[in-house]
Structure formats: C-alpha cells, structure tokens
Length: 145
Image (cartoon, rainbow, N blue to C red; front, side):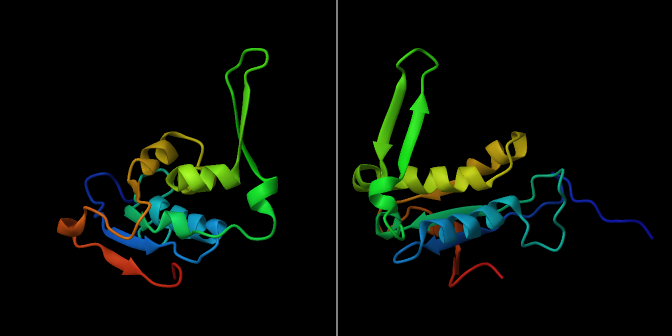
C-alpha cells in the first residue's frame, strides 16, 4: 500500500465565502489561511498547493480587540535612511480595510512560493457584495472544522 500524494493534476479547488462582520481580525485570518493552504482537506500534501479560493466579505466590519486600533502600526521600510513609513491601524481600517485583512492572512501563510501563490486566490471585499456568484461559493459559518 502506498501513500497518496496530491499534485497539480489531481487537486480540485472549491470556492468559500467568509463573512468577517463582527469577528476578530486574527480569527478570520487564521480560518482563511487554513482554507488557502488546504489543511482542511483529507488529501493535504505539504509540498503541493492544495488550497481553495476564499472570498472575504464585510472587511470593513472586522474587529480589533483591546486597544490595537491605536497601538498597532503597519510599518514598511524602503531600505534607505529615513525610509520608514508607519500607518496606524485606525487609519488603515478606515481607508483600506481590505489591506488590513490581507496583511493578517499573509502573515499566517508559509513564507515560500506556495504561500505567495496561495495569496493570489484570496479575494477581499469591503462590503457584503462580491462578483463571484458564478463560481457558486460555499458559505463558511463560524470557523473551519
């Protein structure tokens, strides 16, 4: 008896919708990262990209607990002296909540080619509508089991 290993030809990708309204940013990001990695599947293979497509709606209604809105910063550095840019999460959530969710999910994916490729299957929308009805996405209630 041999061990089954998934590959690009045998992977079937599904579409899922995750509603982020009223949920913690970290909890939503963790559930989405599991779906993008494919760890919820029986035929998960670490060296193959077995993940599914994920649509996150209501990104503007995601919640940061405690005083993270004022104390947490998104930082980037250009590499040059004085090139540090900081954005407080309060302004990031007001202007671009999709980026806040994307950054949280990106931090929970593997730091390799599979993780970068998985992030392309993530679709994030500020409101409740999304243009992917033709793919017949499955709604995830609660969390990933």
